[in-house]
Length: 95
Length: 493
Image: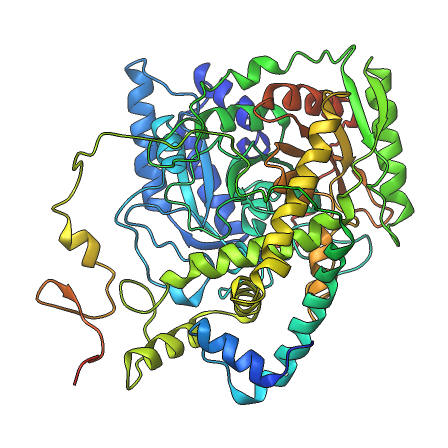
């Protein structure tokens, strides 16, 4: 079932993307084109095929559970759009 | 003295070793060249002062007899790499002004080898594109033009700025990153060597993430030898990237023996595309002849799931991108656009900060990962990806390397293909399969189109067998004898 403007609006909200109302129809058209094109994958027989999640067949990397850095609050905050008393500042979330 | 701009990376290295010129002299030449090709819009940030300081430090090291593999070599860095104290934008408004407090592992490796940074190069936004048209900082121009036609062409993408500065002889090498072809395709479009190593050969730490199961850094250079030297400096295991392989870095340059006698070169019958120009097919056939004349055995092979690679990629890559790009929320770095609530702030920031192609991919990725659609799209794509990788595994039973065209066309004009995302995606039809399988690939300039534009041939290799890849590519390069250069006379600063 093709996506309509309401579907696109819902997906955009899930992705926390503001999309202007007037763009919803054209975006729905573009997304439907792409989704229609990728649906050719249904032709491929994948019965019994394990999904490929990584190209490297490697064991999980392990390391000792030691703190090896820290004390760099100023570096961490250096690019903050807004900060207050050594914290990131955001709009009020609790009244 | 010869014009230092026309040297290869290897020649510059050897010239400094012989005392013919200093790193400072070489770097000044390339700072001047950077200014002379500013019309290309290839850099987002130039770092001339830093380059001068790094070059002076290189000369001081040399006086002490302590030189690294790339000592004094001026290079450009794709603006997807975090560079301490120098803005990193990923070509996006949402990261404009972001100054990383740390250095990526690959760039640190280059500086440890003595390389000199000229600046940060332009790219498609978050490396999503094949034309460099999606950068917030404007498109990059390809230094090449069609014969008798003044139309400005794209350098390819996403590593378009890196490709353009090397092709315009304004850097001896540049870093790129390749997720689905973003080093090899611009390499082909600009007549230079673009190399994507095996996934895991270079650390991804400090490279702004697009699709983490695919992203890989690699060198963009004039020659195969330069590529081998630069990859040697970039690669290596990094404890900070759990997918970086615990493998020693071989002497890639030593692999360039020029001898491919007895090597089996696979020719996949599926690498032909409807509407592909006859000259691409003709160049491929010429390349096959070169391999045969050099003593390689040509083997016809089949990679039956090739046609499904692009649609698979356009599920997997956007899915990973939608997750990776969730971090840009206006809180910790980059752009913030205020709103009444936290949610409004997120949506306003991301709505204003991301461009159209990035938004399109975030929406696709969010959709294919969402409940109810995950199995039909994302899981299916992961299974087809396993099929595509399986095709290559079967091929390695019969061959040692694979030869294909790099792209289905030469460089196109700025503005072309912009109204049809799928037409743009088709640029990567020959590069995406190796990306999905994590394999190394290299594009070597092999000839000119009838319009006078460079065309590339691609060699694909076994995992972690970059040495064979370079060896085959070196023979291809010698046979092609590609020495055409773009006309830079119309460029200004």
